[in-house]
Length: 110
Image (cartoon, rainbow, N blue to C red; front, side, top):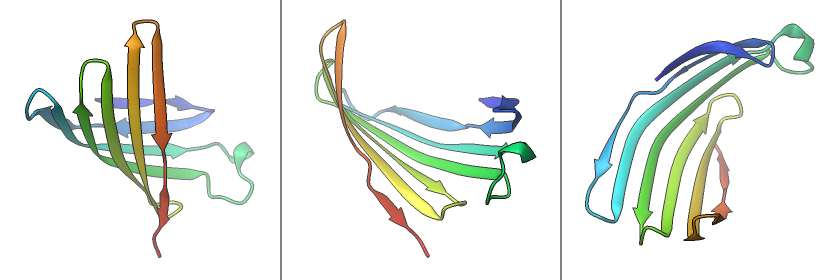
């Protein structure tokens, strides 16, 4: 996937190569890289240079059944020097209803 468009009045470029597949009927892994680069217009700048860059690396999905799954992904933000992980549990008891429990710890790198 490649995206080049306007984003909140600025310019965004995103590139997302990925490869993945199912290891068995429960486990799927998607190894990829999502490069996002955004330059915001000067009118939005207060204490920043108006440039944002983010890297998303890995996604792992474990499906217990078709109604429940566990999903995790890891992201590095070079602007704030943080590594973020997102852990998400999905429960889908019926078609019209999906419940999520999300845990999002952040680690700051120096």
